[in-house]
Length: 228
Image (cartoon, rainbow, N blue to C red):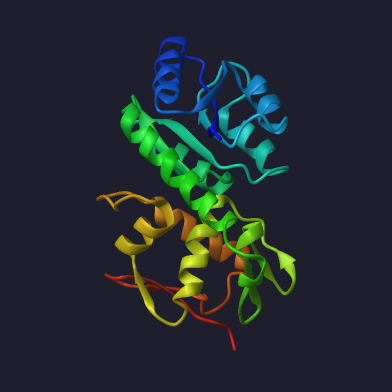
């Protein structure tokens, strides 16, 4: 079955270019030229993943993302203006899974989408009996859910990946380069704060323990500490 991508982009030339490229790579593409149409299509379960421009003519991409996150964990990749750090930070706080700067390289976009979809598909293939417990957390890969004291955490697809990797190596240091590759499917690049933002969001959702259960090991990476 082809993966269904919803492309929400108001620049007609760019939208057509990316749509053709995605289709040539085997994706089924739905298009929207504004935020409201994109939101309706996404909530109508017409896609497996959303590529969402931040600057839209009616409602902003960030507002579309906020409304999506109130109702769905659908993976979302943001298209952001190159060098606009603020939009990226806010996007991750709202619940984006990844971002790619504009003007974007279509090959890089394809690689990001394929990596994200592979991670989702991998977990869906895991059996029902593969749930694992780590203190007050329980991972259920078949549902792509992590529960804290039997209450499901509200995680994005990428936050789920980051946390389940850390849990699988609880008590050990996971290097940032490895975590980036395993959880996001790409290399860690200089000045890329994507992983840091996901870690920050996870700490908030886990309750801001003191000391934090996700510990920063300076110069190396992160370690998950199972609370006693």
